Image 1 (cartoon, rainbow, N blue to C red):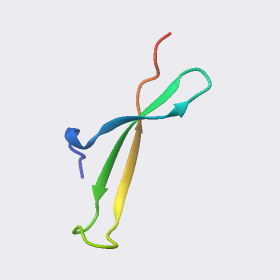
Image 2 (image 1 turned 30 degrees about the vertical axis):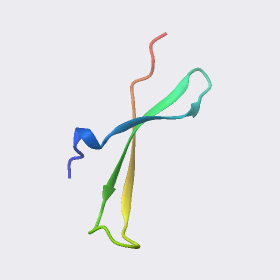
Image 3 (image 1 turned 120 degrees about the horizontal axis):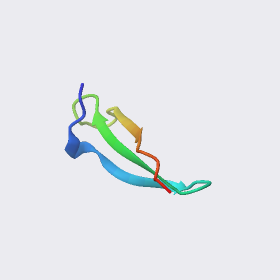
Image 4 (image 1 turned 45 degrees about the vertical axis):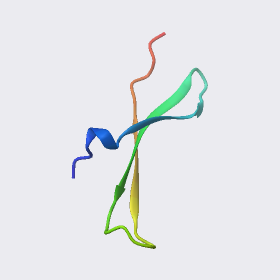
Length: 51
């Protein structure tokens, strides 16, 4: 399954040793939406900042 571009959101995971850590996040529903359904949270690393 390919995650659509609109599903990704860039968020900070806090300050790191040298710079703020940003990752791309997406949530995918694995079943029909209902109480107790499962979702998959995906984190993708972005390119490191250039000093």
